[in-house]
Image 1 (spheres, helix red, strand yellow):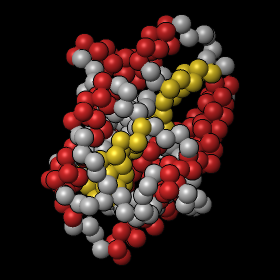
Image 2 (cartoon, rainbow, N blue to C red):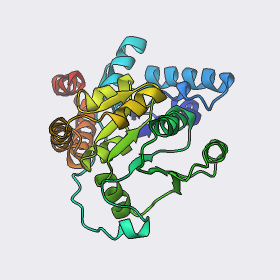
Image 3 (cartoon, rainbow, N blue to C red):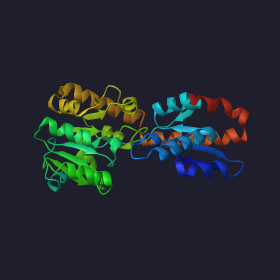
Length: 294
């Protein structure tokens, strides 16, 4: 039997205390939940404690980013298997989306995120308004929570368009693909799926400057840590040659590192190795150690 759990703090104690015997406990640690600004201090302390329990009691740890892999090693002296999320290269198919949203291809900026403070939505909108650029900024995400309501109340500028959630994947990918620039403000977490989808859509990406995003994008994006830097990225874009090189490099990463098929294959390999480790620990030890070291 296996206990394969994505790390959610509320489940940690049950996972630790009530796990059936003769199981292999495989835990995907996801991101650093305790760093999210939406939580109060007691909740953050509990989440940090839960993280420690999960790291201590997992027989196999999975990290979806290289930064998380290093964090688990340095914080808990635990070696994790690196298995990032995946995406597939997108080819634009339907231009009717631009009639629906009253847009011109290549003449708008886009931000897609949950309405949470750590996604730096306020900073991005302020930077966009500071640029005084004529292109509109599309903000895609459900604004029904308290932070979403605060943001929409703060920014009633007609050039900032709050689109709510868009569940049609074709519409979403076409909007990504044809944007003039894609803003990724996420600052907490591992390999963010929405960032991979932007890479797969050949977006010109401007990302928040942090270790998580840099581990994925490396030199293939513009980076910001303030509204002023965002305005500069808008008003002084890179040369088209450099932008195209970045897009091609990110597509190559999607094909070789972040493909959905590779994600499935890596999990399958891990499960087989974990099962073999339980049944034949001596013969499986070498293969499993190699997987962890990658």
